[in-house]
Length: 248
Image (cartoon, rainbow, N blue to C red; front, side, top):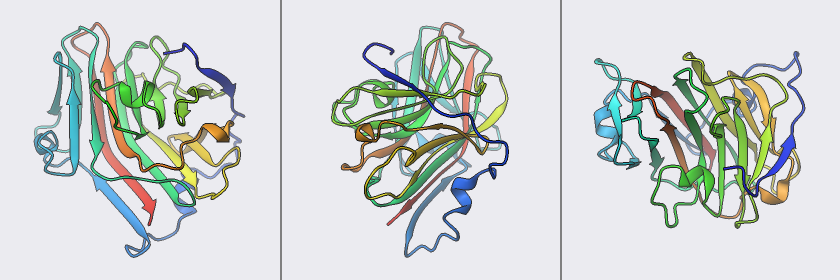
């Protein structure tokens, strides 16, 4: 995962920052101006059958199940053999000049080796779940995307130029067995500058893209969320309240 990545550090979030600022900057979501997708997974078993707009890629040792007997939570688990799963939306998001954010509630078992990610990705030649946040030619991903490290990172690449990894200075830990809201947001710049793309944990800015040339903005990309679990078959990664808002 780390081979060939360019490392950079973002500034620590300021204490005066308004929580969930990426939401309020967009105001009301008029349907004529915005695409809004929200999924509470009330019928999570249907999600794997592509009846609610999601398509899944599941490793042979992994499962996607409804983690709540009343519906409402997607659980990804594995048989303890380093397997995972991802779900991607059947729509294309193109960032250039368009405001966008994606957020999800996630809960990851307390293991630094478990991986969770949300983001946007090209789907060309995708065969493994983690392809969407590691090897695609164009992608943006945020989460605990590095083996052995529960610190969330913002990773992005454009045209196979070499993935850029941005690590927060502040101490964020996603893999603590608690629910967190993770998000990525784009400010709609038609000419990318440092800071056009940001990532958040529980509404607080965690990372900001500092290499604008490697932010993919010229292709429609599919929104996704997914996980890969390591060698403990009892571990579970849970997703809920996935929301995607994109300017038309």
